[in-house]
Length: 448
Ligand code: TRP
Image (cartoon, rainbow, N blue to C red; front, side, top):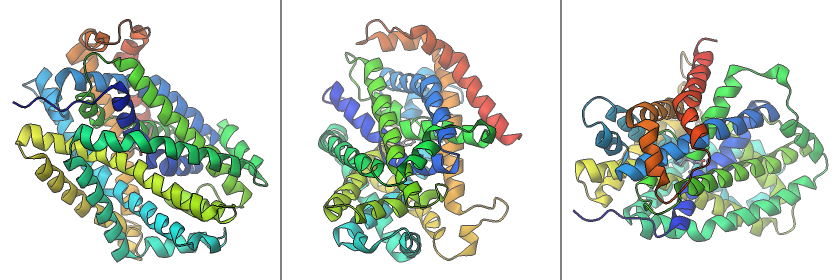
């Protein structure tokens, strides 16, 4: 058997895993979800979720991956060859394909906005016409399917080339560039007139508005943003070498990811309030506000184009991890070639992505599905991002805590880490705190 592809270095893992973590989740999903959920209140529960459950589960997932050296299905099987635990792995593979389908649609939007930016279309965008421009853009079904297919094609291309040759190389150079542009936008946004109202919305929680929905959205966002709960980190962990410090590597990933999301909030909310726009307008939020900021900024065409280009690339390093999970499954368990696996899975995501695209066309059925009263895309995001990832993380924590056992996981973690200072808290979180919190949040959501 050929030896399994490995990351070139710990930095390689950190970059690739933060490439997976940092993406549209931070810059597109975090702001609009926070905007919908009262801003500061959401931010607070988001941070709690990251620290109390997110990081511990991230460590658990990555160590299971490195220990087994497998895709999610293989990882559960390698510890429990009999029994049904492998179903959690299958569930993760399916979740990945489904998230990939609608995530690629949003990535297609960024591709389209990159094109708008570079052709100078932002110049005429104002807070008055931005929403209409977006509606026309997203409602152009043929173009949206084309953009979706382009983006999936790019993802398939990178994944076909393999782990360290493909993913790692791209992540290494481009992530720092995005960060610099975000800093620039931060200064721009904070200096806008009326920015302080946005800061207040973002930083001053109003506890009287607390609902179970806010907490589940915050927890779901934490899992989504860290790429947890469907085996992406099992798969990336499987490429991590034994002598690397798993704890510090994953802590860096969580830090970068959280930092960038918080930064995005500091850019979006001051700008939204200074333009008199509403923070709870949903998925179009950043596409409505960012062009307006660029339009009023010296060098806006250059910065705007660069920004959307880098955002596309950040999305690409994330879609790559989504596709990689099911691809690794196809390679390990079905013995497909890497290329064939990536193509088959990518094609499936394209198919499932189309109804999400139709949610933005003028078709009442997809805009408001009967019974659930939300768009097809909204339903997909709720089911797969919030619910499936929370349930996946719950089962993962239970598996590592009670089946594989935290003592064994800690042995795996100790390779290359040495002394793990928070071993006690970690065990408690994986065995009790994490599962209980997830169950409590899911229950309060369903039985409200
Ligand atoms: N974390 C990515 C983002 O925030 C999205 C993502 C990539 C993801 N891989 C994942 C989400 C696996 C859940 C599971 O943009």
